[in-house]
Image 1 (cartoon, rainbow, N blue to C red):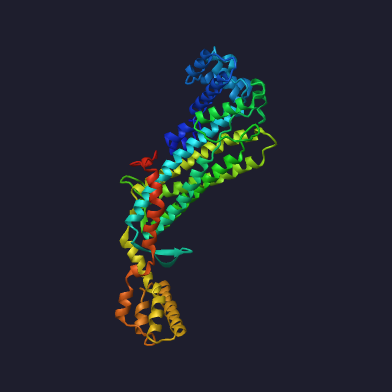
Image 2: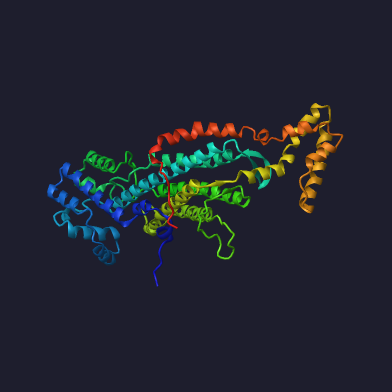
Amino acid sequence: MKEYKNPLVERYSSQEMLYNFSPKKKFTHLEKTLVSFSRKPKKLGLNISEEQINDLKNHLDDIDWNRVSFYEKKFRHDVMAHLYAFGEKAILAKPIIHLGATSAFLGDNTDLILIRDGLEILLKKLVNVLFRLRNFTLEYHDTPTLAFTHYQPAQLTTVGKRSSLWMQSLLLDVEELEFRLQNLNFRGVKGTVGTAASFKELFDGDLQKVKDLEKEISNKFGFEKVFPVTGQTYDRKIDAQVLNLLSNISQSSHKFSNDLRLLQNLKEMEEPFETEQIGSSAMAYKRNPVRSERIASLAKYVISLSNSSAMVAATQWLERTLDDSANRRLVIAQSFLATDAILTIWNNILENIVVYPKMIEKHIDQELPFLMTESIIVESVKNGADRQEIHERIRIHSMNTNYKIKLEGKKNDFLQRILDDKKIPINEKKINQMLTPKNFIGFSSDQSIEFVEKKVNPLLDRFYHFIDSNMDLKV
């Protein structure tokens, strides 16, 4: 029997994101942090030779995972296990490995690198979703469709205006993601409880040397900002903020998946359905929206995990407790992997999404007579009628029409009832002029075009190099 495999690894997440949170990348960066940490103290006067630095560099990709497992079982400490295994390879450098450093210096700074790189992967995929939604919006910006409130027929909007609402949510997410990237700080060189006491001893009380060391290491790994103060770890609210962002992205994605599934039930829009795809094991005719459902399922998972990181941030003790460790190993990586999968699926849907204009027109035709009531009232008042009297007569005709439609399955004869009512001063020619759906879409088309031009296009112009041709699914 095969052992359990994480579905995010086996079925959903991209190789790019899987590598980002892989042990190989994590511990390679951990060792790179060690090298950078050792090089600068040499410049600042500590007794570290160039041969020792080169010995560290030469063994960056030489991780003996069996020895790491042996030492972790022995010491019950993952970072020390890697340091011992690293020391067996880098024999010359062994005496200076980890000099003055802490596990949190290596682990926390490495985690921040992985979080930053993970956010950049997600940014690329968000840009691709926006690109495809932008194109969809432009194609259908003036295509009338029935709008719903409370999932009851309301007024008319356009297909493109509705997709602009999906883009609006995503723009908020992109803005937040950029903010997080721009304000993500490195933990830096802070020592065991955040006081840098070991570095004060190493550098004979020279605070400027500690600051120089911190700045160089941070810049080496692409961070312009460093936390001015920490305990043993960086503030776990950072994790909570990042996972809240992933939750927000998942909320936007789930909203789209809900809307598409409702529209697929109405036969107005449909996610891709391949030639040999099976919709149901029992009902051969079915075309179940499995991609949208997968987005919704994964989104619920990501949203739930954000609460876990909030609990960790809230319950840390003083300078640090270790009850964050196992939790963070799970929720940070899995939140990123699941969000990555969500955006991959969303892009895949948008590549071949289907719109059925004739079904859209059919639903408009069924409801348009009712949507014209305000215009009929206005026209009747212009022709000398009393507004309240006309409103009451239209209300009665509407109720009777709905009764016939719902209980007897009759067609909508509301407009004929209006024309037959001699107390409503409006003629058939005027009614026919009103029947054009585009008369009832308000400024939907204009709003969609302006939104694309002023908000979406500038962002896509900044990130045009991120746009891919297609995004395939594993399953």
